[in-house]
Image (cartoon, rainbow, N blue to C red; front, side, top):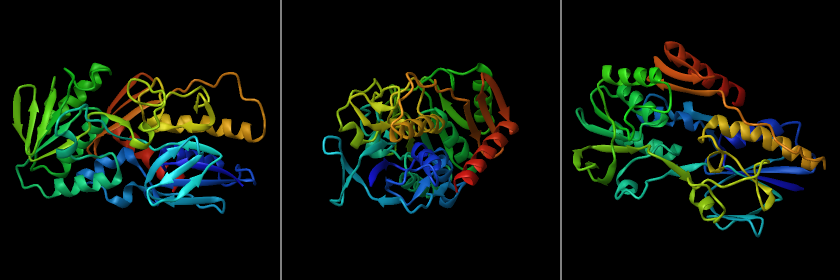
Length: 355
């Protein structure tokens, strides 16, 4: 049997499973999915898990079942491209004929002293659980610092405000205005929400050091009781250890078929792949659609197209608690209750379609 091995059960590889199973997988091919958990986790909702407004169960989706799909749970120690084999932490070795690397990302601390040691994370479901436990245990009046005011930081700070109205929340943004790369109307809506809900947005910030119960912003020291880091990502260590040609952010460079340039049996999907767009669940799913088409053509010994279609993203949806939200879709800004309902609908459809 030919072995298609999928590393990571994130959005990209879930879409590959959805497209190949149950009827599009050749009879001589089996799929092996390797992930640390026995379920797909909706990473875009980890902020709500960490804030305590959604349960663990709400962010899980079961993997599909199929007679030629094998789920392997465990930690990946090394990706052996020369050996065409995955080395697991428990000593197992899993051979592959075709490989899709979709292991996602982890926090990038930008060499800030103490950031790795003294901050919490929402990059994995396990780390999000630990963050929830830490935030849940804080006393009334405690100060929580959220470093990074991208989509994750914004959603975490707003959700935490609704969950714990007794906390003092500080959101540290390197930019002069929040979401500065998007229309000012969008920025102003988010800014006003934070002002009305007593979340302190610290603009033009530069966190230079993290100590226990202390943040250093420029020359200022700010007492904190807990810090959550959402200020950058990088591919996970097994991918970084491959030593492949990468872009400035550490993402692996790929060809138009989403393969390694020197190995057309290895594909990279999601946060590990170097593409002109910022990493997102939507981008991973669009990549996966194209990878499935390439795999099917190769398996049928059909020629690949000279060029692949340009990936076009629809935009993004963000939440400000459970009642308000914001969206940027087709160069149009949507804010308020409608945007939040749109996001809720997309999440419901995703769970219904996959689960």
